[in-house]
Length: 199
Image 1 (cartoon, one colour):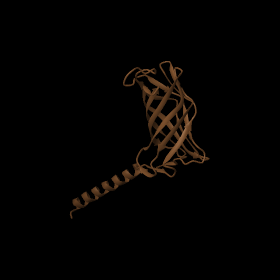
Image 2 (cartoon, rainbow, N blue to C red):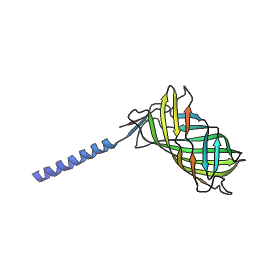
Image 3 (cartoon, helix red, strand yellow):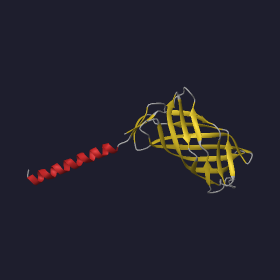
Image 4 (spheres, rainbow, N blue to C red):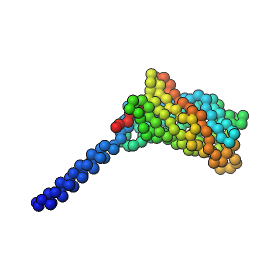
């Protein structure tokens, strides 16, 4: 083998090694050493738009979290939330949402996970859909402390209201809605996800 050929083989080998090292350095692993599901409740909350406020006295959320190790830059948790005791213009209103939490970061303390939550909600009155709400908000999930995990949806958000298939949404059509900070808490002693991100 000539010197040039040996040099070419060496260069190719080094490039492959650097490629493997680079891929390994960029790998992210999420570990859930807790429950694959969670059930949490929240207190009062509001969603305001176009001078109208949808207020609720409580909410319940359930979700499914992948167990074990997940190699990915993000960690997704899917679930549903139902808001109770809701009033819109003094009328009893139902609110049911589907959501996907996408965890992206975790401080070095490995206690909280932050990211964005994508939601889509049906707003109903008298069993008829009157509004559709969709968009995203920022969330902070805190691993169980003294047996209680919390999921906080921060104030603001990027949520849009829209009309139902027929009729007009009282919250507006295409309007930006403002969400009050809402914190869901798991029941003390029940299982909840325990998330850790590496590196």
